[in-house]
Image 1 (cartoon, rainbow, N blue to C red):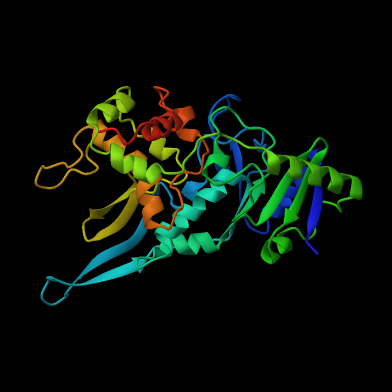
Image 2 (cartoon, rainbow, N blue to C red; image 1 turned 180 degrees about the horizontal axis):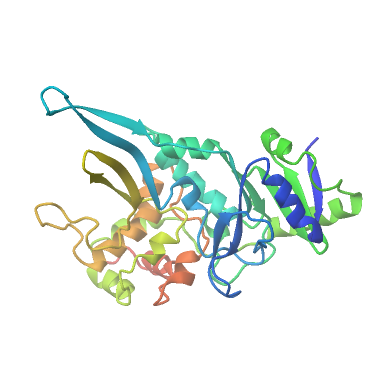
Length: 354
């Protein structure tokens, strides 16, 4: 029988405080004091109120792929007799602790399907990502509301999609019903909340059922890969689609499935660190080669690559999955209101015309 508890609204902070003694806890919260300002996932602190009413501005991506991280530390050791460098000592910098993300959205967790295929399957496995993935648990909210930018149903998800989640959260007027979806998650709920009575369980079930039926977004992604190939060389089309773009890269930074990064060595004297940090295919220097040649010199090539990556390259390489989870963050955050749904829709319209 599934472990299920009820948390009254006025008891939420108390329960989260207890939960934080069991595991590193992250919650969606305001990043500034302004209530209408940006939100993101931060480590839980007593008294810090979670923001469940709206999707976070920033995704959960940084918990599994930090914006900046140290991959390893190294030190050159000199030969005490000869004085020359004779060896290098390398220290793996990984420090991973079990973590629970309380209040994720289904689109955030669905994005991990793409991330998992890239970082943990195939011939190249990223041990940093894999270890964090194994130790990160997601308590996912059933979405009762969505805004005009959401289109999760168009890319295989939905408001009540729990694929990849460990706990399900259903918000009632008087509190939250939290259900464990895995055995490990069930142990996290021990000693928390109270039993769920029949009335609350019935009410929660109705909310989940209604959310499961709701279709969010009407973008038709079928045939996108072929349409992209047909449109690839139509520069006039791409000029029209990207004419407003500033190449600021914000769409890639708020995207839960964008994973481009760069690696640099930062050294001081004989010691140093190898750092990995986020990069963006929308930046002009991203593909700049040492020779000075750049295969994507203009924003046309860069934005075309971004659309192709989401709706053509990834589906073809990873057996049909899309590189988009329909969260709509790129649309909300774009300073010039470029809407990727319109681009994809236009991409398919008369795509066979040359």
